[in-house]
Image 1: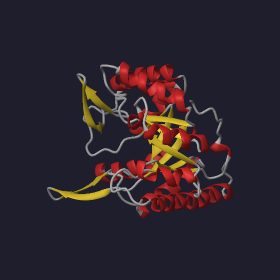
Image 2: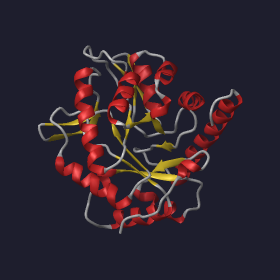
Image 3: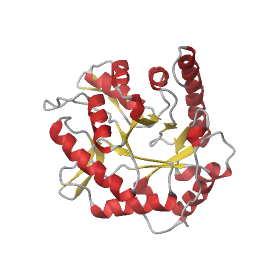
Length: 294
């Protein structure tokens, strides 16, 4: 049975959520926590039945859901896989989530799926491709989606549109929104030597519908420091600071803690989400004191 609740967490102050993991189903369902919503990766729930769907339905009856795709491959020139799109659409129709999102990335070529979110050069050619794919996805599910900025490790010579401008053009062309991953901005800024605050300043805040936060790891590779977006540790202080700066610039947005490797106890995720709420509250207060919109 589809979730027919009409949730509106945006009407509440400082909405926070976490990625839902199977080992945390019972604690999430019991509701003894301050979380506003839960996010799931669509591909983990594209089956016909079983305990995962039963728990998701039960949790979705009590809390708003965010469905986050990781395999649509919106940057693929060959277009979207119809079977995958149909399964994604069925999931959205069944659970009527509050938010739906995907990535500015590609992961499929010639029918072969790669277990990664690969970046693409940012130029007019790829913008046309991804705009067509976003339009097709939105038409299929009958609603607006949010597109997440990637974490990057190299730059393309054929890139000639700055990433924030690229996302803004994509949003203007398709009506989609932006899922602003602050950790990804920080990781990319460190790896590619640009100012993360400049990126935030260049983002069109009107398009941002959600914010992601996560941890990352640092590795030395051939004498160079590389930051890897592995979602396996707490959010670091520099990313918290960048998050506060982002909220000060664009205002309050639903904020989610991602933690996909080295999964901790549920209480740890809740603690990270509570920290996000505190930082959001401080940023909103500062924004309002300076005369900005709440």
